[in-house]
Image 1: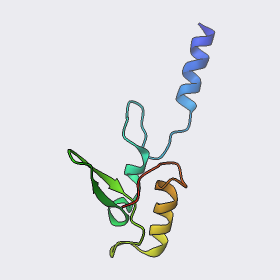
Image 2: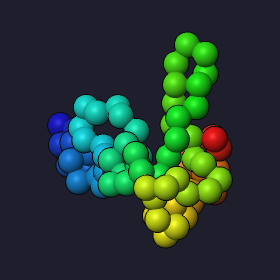
Image 3: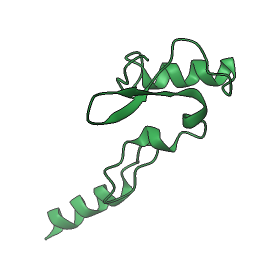
Length: 83
C-alpha cells in the first residue's frame, strides 16, 4: 500500500508539458499563444494538419516565427513538417 501511495504522489507531482492536463491527449503545441498566426496548413488528402512555413506569414512577427519554428520543427520537441 505504501508503494501505491508513493506512485500516486509522484504522478500528482509530475510536471506537465504545455497544454497537457490529466486525461488530455491533445498535443501541447496547440496551446501556443500565436499558433494560428505563425503556422500554415498542409493537405494530406483526407485530412489537414499544421505545418511550419519557411518564412513568417503576414500576421506573424519574425521573433514569434523563429520561436515557433524552433519549437515545432525537427529542431525542437515536435516534428511538425515544413509547408
